[in-house]
Length: 207
Image (cartoon, rainbow, N blue to C red; front, side, top):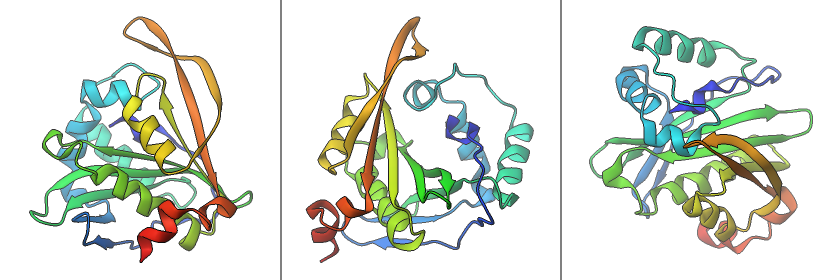
């Protein structure tokens, strides 16, 4: 999964020991376990995931290089990136990734990307549930004022998720990346803390 190409500056940021059990959606979010590196590597080199997630063409990376790059990023307190795993609570299977990056503690903003990479677990609400909890974590635990996400113009499913969660479309990065030989726009969405605390999508689901 090419979400790991990002490297943003942060200040004294460390990977927390973060775990959430979502009994209703049957998922658990955990810090990355390097014992799952082969699964992450497979996703990183998956053409379909790359098509929806990355601004760049797929460049298959050897396992050894991928492992070193991921470990270095996780060990770097200034990477400005937090990578979390999504596990299915029922069978404990690793099914996807939450990537919180562009973490800026000065302006209190960050970017979230979320992918359910295992096909058998897609389109069942797990991605929405994981994204919702990541948003909560960014506002309630990290003290962010603004959380952003983005989607290519052809990714109707992710655009619908962001819209349903009351994210506001901020703008369009026109002809942002080449996809299948054609330029694609990228749509940028965000949610502010003031909107989050009054949003039924987040506050009512806590009860």
